[in-house]
Figure 1 (tube, rainbow, N blue to C red):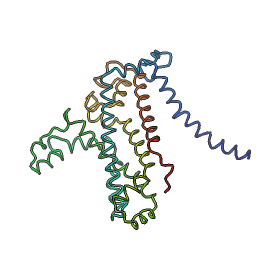
Figure 2: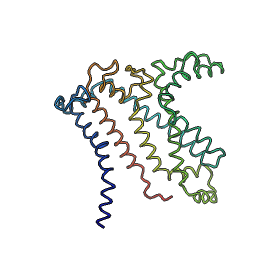
Figure 3: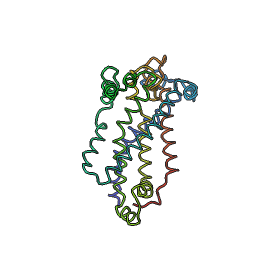
Figure 4: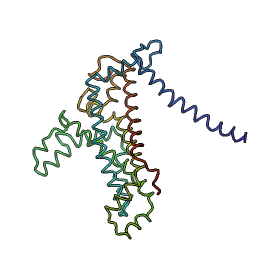
Length: 301
């Protein structure tokens, strides 16, 4: 028994040390930083100026931060409905016995293996371009001159152009998560439902959906985490400047932490840390609500 304990300690020690260094220490340091005014991330602690909850109070009284939070809320809510609906639809179709399942699955997932920078650049240069973009050519071919002339990257349309492009790239990832859950459901349940006279819609409503509650929680959590960390797409669509139509909290945090962008006149890493704390709390809150509302302990696969 003592030998076993020694082996357990020997194998666990590296993992625990790495966890403390890579995860726990940065979390504690970020929480501490959020209570101070810090000119640079690399400043020694004796240069930190304690402000208490001043960073948080300033955030919630700043209009540009409220705009950034509203933008990320729209991305999470509207984009979430679009991505979850389309990904679930594709997952159901691809697990229904359709031919060429592997091919279609690979095609739908393909955008996820492309760099976000490359994918966003493709949308900016080859889809939304007002000179030779795909949308311009498509609508011109249909004779819809007004839509062909739409400036998709101006302030009025840029947010929706950004949201559509981002959703396009995320559908495949969440589709695979749905598929993993659907494929775990016993075929015997569907066979029994067929014998009882259930149609496709009824099978989906009374068998598939209830047994996917756990998968739904996973998808919502992963979508929330990716939405909270939304940065690259906004940065590329707004060309680093503070375009309020696409500004998100992480971009605003980057501006304050490193002093980039026209919206920031002073650099304060503590202010940026406070933004990170707020986003983390939002993720935890949504995860907690999902756990309370979606309980699948009584379901057996």
